[in-house]
Length: 352
Image (cartoon, rainbow, N blue to C red; front, side, top):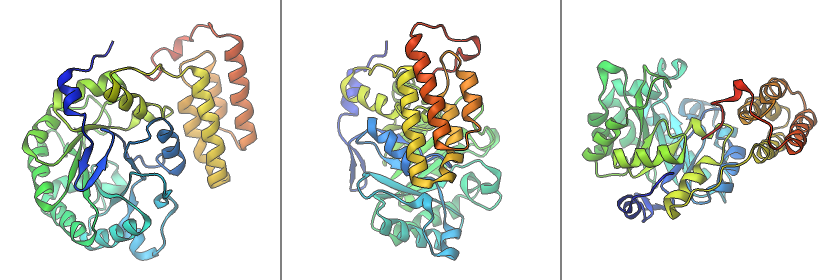
């Protein structure tokens, strides 16, 4: 059973302050490319009303030349607080994109300096900026000068094991005007392998006066509490733990505020959420939404009898009706066999 220490409860009792912006939750939903669209954010917010949400990262160069907001930049004016995340290596393009994001309704501007994907880093964006701290600082300063909302940075602890520069880089971001730093406890070389090095987040927190948010390996309430205790961070950001499990941010937020754990959703409740997700994606994006829904549906279909078979079927759906029928049949089967044991291949796949 997870315990919330009195020290941690006191430390996290007040709102998270990002410059003049107050957020009534210390648990944030990470920006995830191809995932955190308007639909996904609405599902997360069902269970986490106060948490900061982030759009998928937006290419500032694309905005400069196209002059039209992409679908991934679209936000609901009622989904507050909301941040639009940008990436690029050109200070002027990022400043211009930030102004467009503020006009769209962003409460903060987040600059991605942590994405490890080759197509981003080879063009000078994402975690490649860890190797160019002067340019990274110039980017932050340019964006800060261009907008009247807080500018934040999401990054990693370094490029590789031999090039860990988390503390120095974080100080540069603060000096350049960043008003919050989110630190993923892995290097770029690690990608998403190995364990997050939370000790580096602790070192960055000790060195900065702005809020530091811990990111990496936050898959449960217990992990979030351990991370906050170890790092002294001002909050946690959930990433891969929310794939097929939009309940996680709300579960952690509820525990930090009350000290009580919410009951985990049953397989039927998870599949009902998957059904809603599928319908909402279809209504929002049409056939493209169905194609995008396939990966989401397979993430939901884990940890119950016949889940592996259902995953295979959901991965190739062509229509919303086909997907709904598959999910409804699975729900009916689970309702008829509530005590059925989990299949061997499903052990370890349940979200915790």
